[in-house]
Length: 297
Image (cartoon, rainbow, N blue to C red; front, side, top):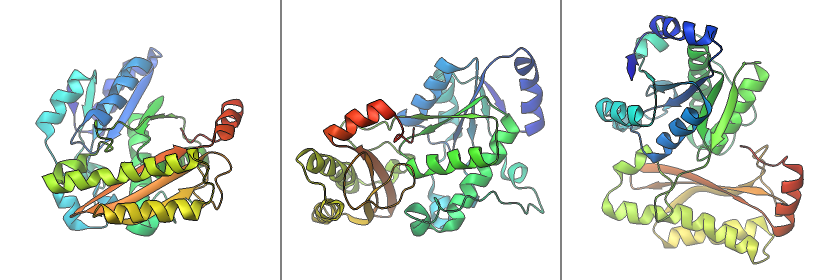
């Protein structure tokens, strides 16, 4: 695997594969790799002729400096794992290359960014995400880029970005990878103490409780959310939000009449975690299978 730090070197490296018509896949990451990241790389390896993974802890998407400073970093470990997963080029640009002196441009998506993570972390969070993703897509010019379903709102925002700006890339979304006890894999999990790690299971358990409620016939979204929030509090976790929303627009729903997305965010100790799960009734599953219009993947 080759390590590249400058955009010019990366573009030169990709000139020949591009001329030969080889399919190029990009997996944008902030490092601290786990099986969730590696699943994206492996999927890209199956789909593409050339696989690039970017490793860049993007300061623009952190609204809390302490959170940025605490973000786990281990480039040596990440390099070994990426190579094992089949990545051919690890692109590790320095901050000054991504945001050079005088940088004054922002790519911003309205609407989808105003709620949930946008409301909790501020509009600047998604502006940071969409700006760096736009830059990475322009730097690499991949045929396909791979993202995880765990960040469901981010996926929708990026899809809107690509659609609105006519960016010539296919966005591929891969399923959330979970620990055996259900906790969604995240680089932030490494910051949890043993007690916090135990309590963190509450997020996925609350999502499962919502799915069980729908399966049992409950259709009132407020009742489901109230029950799941109470369960989390009982588990010693205070949710920032737990909502049932439209998978396409993220608008809150009142009744579960078809597929809906359950989304949750909470702080466990000093660590902020997010998760989501699609919920649907038996009728909704049959309709969705026929229409395939509800999925955000």
